[in-house]
Length: 387
Image (cartoon, rainbow, N blue to C red; front, side, top):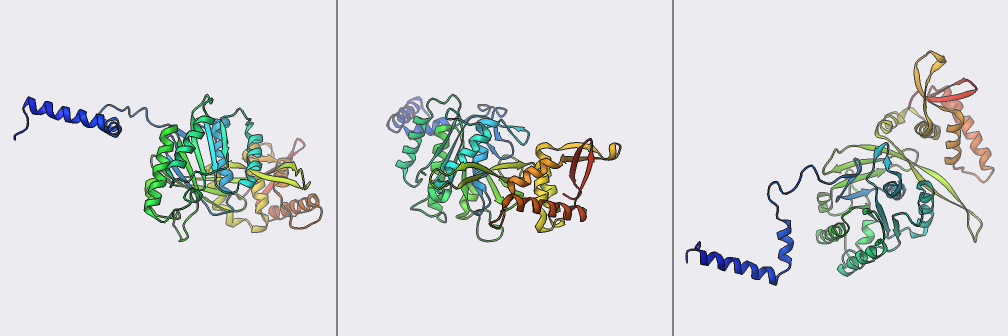
């Protein structure tokens, strides 16, 4: 029969209506169908952390153990909740949720240090979760979403990011090397993002082969929006943006871990310590990376301490009062950073060991022309000759 008469068109419409009534899922696709001009290109997703993460994105942050990536991810959560700026750029503030499937024993320490640094309280829009939903189990994903909605129902700000640490602990019962399991993980991720209208970050591990960004099936690399690689285990470490679906790739930021003393253990009486993160902008990081070969390994703590002090409290200073302008820091500020970061190797007096190491390495760095100093108006100032 030739189609096109009014009766036939009416029959088609009736058939469509019948399917819409019988299959609610049809509405999902109807809602997803857009016409030209229906969406405003000037009202798309906003950056949450500029250059790192935007609304609705999925980011994978990979790095080997010891790089401090968990400290970095927690720091990003705190910045979103409280700080309002990341390396001088505005952050889209809101709520943050940190979910961990490993390392729960040290999480309370890390959160305590973060709360002290960011002035977070029990009223802040921040949660940490000591149980990882198993994403291969649809019911666990549903339960996680329901529980999170209940706990955040009174929040006055939207959740901006949910961070899962790590991807592997969310895939229990499956394999990161199987495409079907990665597909299920990404489906669960999409559902969580849809329910909370947020972005997600998954901590992960790098591939074993040289140049392989991520461990696991290649579909993971291809289907996420952002990939950041954490590297380095001492001194100034780096985060490199290897993939940014809607932005620039290749950005390299620096960070260092700052030791924090929380007090003495209630049972053992031993000192309880953890770390917070000091972030370093890309230009400073480039200079540090380019010049690392100039500094002997034994005195890089001096360079890192001065660099951190310059970032926090550096001032422009004209040498001799009328000479060239350099970026300097007061001697004691750099010494204070060194004192906090110093980790001794022996059992003796740690304060004395730190003092000797500082004096010895400052002298060596000066003699080798790596740093310089000048005293004016009662203040001794340091600067890096070779950063």
